[in-house]
Image (tube, rainbow, N blue to C red; front, side):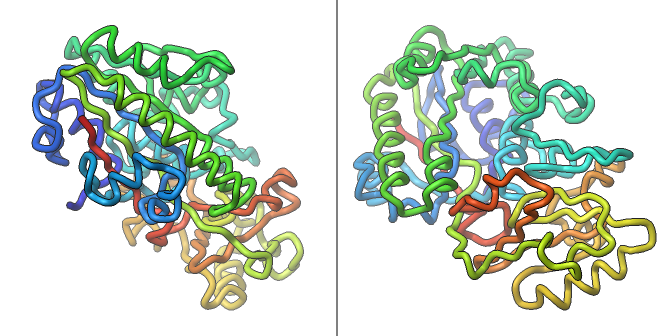
Length: 371
């Protein structure tokens, strides 16, 4: 079944009877008539990772075997990174339209690099990301739309960009998260959104397939089992992800700051290790393009901004968003990663698992429906 992360909330809204919403994914056929819907995004739960974590996740193993619920494959948007995907989920729009075009982007007209997960209130969220969210549309239709999120997320730029219009239900550290989501779902009809980052964190820090990652998979499965066991009769559970991922070995890491040929002519470095946005000095774009094309042959696709936009990877790009994309866009293939040790926190170079690129390991995500 074709479909993307952009189709999930429009389909959920249609299943809840929202006027003007289209059930692109055929959710109603999968879950029947419902008055309550929990949509849970498991950060880093790539479709192609499901077989690897099944031994620690009995519910997900049962889904994978076809014994519980229904499983379909969707794609996330590009870059396959959390801020971009969360805003694509919340708005139903492609990145070129909503403007959250990467993990980090250059703020046009400045030397500043905005890290979306640490975004406070500058730039202003509703101007940086101008597209209405489906939480706003649901509320406009008189349907409750709640988001159960860690209290540290509430009020951030990314939360506002992705979920504005939701009734926020902050959770304290140590509070039983699954119980809180279940309680919200039981409290009133409508949509309840939940999010967990445990699996993605383990993949980054320790690697996909590590003991840490398998422990996180077990915790995610326990969360989903609790929600399924406490679903009201008129409710369904939809589980998805923002991206997958892969491990990058030491020999596949290239540090642009350790090679003067790669650093020449670059004014600002943004993006992330699997997708680099290179903003060049005036007149240097052609030279940067040539050097990177030669030095990364077989390891990455090197394009001008215009070529990347014309290829359609971002969807149609609004004029005001174009300058957020680098003059040169470098998309890694296979298991390559491009570090920028003088431009980024040292923790980035210490990560094991990465995502952001266009490989199926990174872009394929699950759609799991459960009653």
